[in-house]
Image (cartoon, rainbow, N blue to C red; front, top):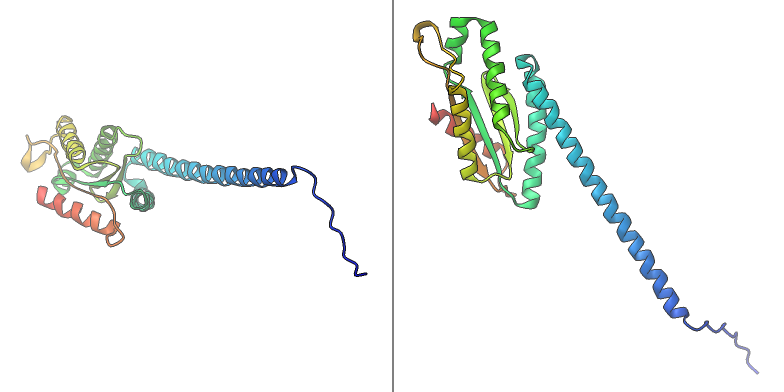
Length: 214
């Protein structure tokens, strides 16, 4: 008679046991994937805060650190732009120019000019109260402040606060315009990033608004 191999009979409840094993295996993998994602997010946030701390520290030491500040600012701005694009949240930028800085430098000397840059930089830094806000030297007598997650009204408020804080320093221009105090011109822009736009567009709008404010 034909021979046929007999398969061993499964123990009662074997299907349920296999299902539990598969479920626990999937849950374990899901936890590992979630933990890995949280770990990557934490590391990204740590790196961003470390970069912000380095720029803020460099801002306190004046123009000698300007190239490093600008490079780190550009890196931070690019990272924040990508994050705002991914999460579809607003990103704001202020560009700040010290009015008649060349005149101040010529009238009072380069050491006084460097001290002015330091004091203005420190004033800008103290006006940026949110942890994610990042001020930096941007070039020459210009500063920039990146403000993630801010709305247009909030951006205007920060710009006005910066201008008033520098006026309150009551630093005299000296020279042929003695009696006048150092002031700022500030231009801002805020946007929710899109695939069609870019960080350079945000910078261009803020720069245009800064020159119109002079």
